[in-house]
Length: 311
Image (tube, rainbow, N blue to C red; front, side, top):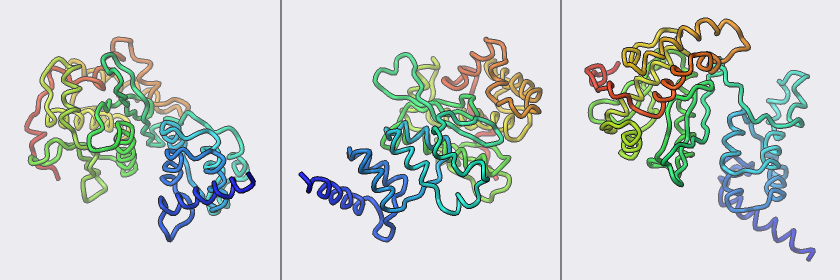
């Protein structure tokens, strides 16, 4: 029986060589996820993290995603404790032992952090399908119901969220559909960048899922235009600090003006978050915000601004 641990380590190491580049024996986050999916024990994965001197820089939202991908608490805890040496050298003295404490599971959703989160979203009629909501600082932006070209809805949602975080990091900007030949894409045009950033491709299944819940015809091009306008208005409010311009004339979109006014009253207080502004709106307006995220309003149509060539 004494040989069993050695055999186990042999096979785990062999797997590591298959999932990791030959030139880099330290585990990446992707490697840890792959080992977890191959049903290796927590003990083996933690042992490999330690044996290979692997290091990770995880934010709170990364931990949420790893939990959603099925990684266990011991493995995540080991990753949190495996901080790069340079990172530990520059940490304030009060934080150098923070990794030994309980891992936070709730991200600090402030606009200043530009935090985009992904969370499971349950709704009637979804059956066994898993949907995800994408949020900006605690306020729901939209719902992803189809995996598109990705392995799962969750993987696609995380990718979209990461791209939106990159958009936040570039500062002020706006969203537009892609050029006429690819009008089923949503692009971000940052004022400080030379090239637009692809946020997502709208699939026919995306459009059909929104059509079912909107009670109107929804095409991929229409949904791309709608999401572009919706994201732009939220960016105007939370990032650009300007009133919304795209959807505010729609009945359901009037609430965005109220959200802008409410956020203007609250954002001078550091302890308050963007979600607090939404939660302080009247109940009916909160419902309108929800409707903007999960449906396409009846009054929304593609117009010349969606078809115009962007800078």
